[in-house]
Length: 269
Image (tube, rainbow, N blue to C red):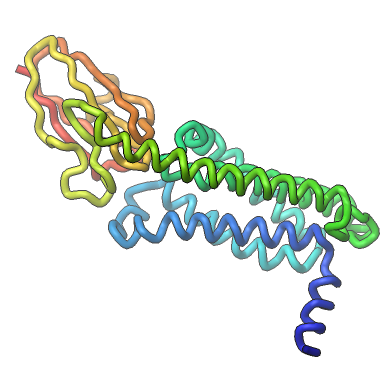
């Protein structure tokens, strides 16, 4: 009983802002870890072949380090937290935002929870930098959850929880209906680690024919010609299709830009 009281006293001695920064970074680190482990187990080489995955893993480590340092409540640790959170938003915001439109996308959970969490961390970090000299405990919205800062945090947590629940329901519906999607070539589930990511891997079409790809993987992929400028799709989310008409005969090799180990070929005759 006395031990738990001592722990609670230590918790109360830390400003609320420090706990928000700590909790936000730990949560994001765990979310990335949960997304990364299955992929790394299935395809350890992806940490080398996929630069996006590798850089996100670097940020995962930074999140855990920043979380630990954030509890120190120093100005420099607040600067570190602000830089890490804002840098992640700048580098990966444009990559994550499209995932919000598709709950079945593997990055949806990270997008719907990570973006608001990082914005919250950035806000508290910047305010902590501004008021570091006078002391965070002197500002009620930084010192205690019984304040506007606490209401803001609860509001964002509520939004994230609601988004995750709605996303789980919507994602399951999309995945159930995905089997009905028809195309000439399918990007298979778990394509990054599959022996044949595009099925069929070799596809033949007549000159003037149109080939359609459908992505049935929860990770976004592209269909990009090995010869620059011949053809290339945008990032295709789960369930999305893309088509290209081949006006000249030849053999066209293609790959996925973020995951170059995925490849296929179209023979136009």
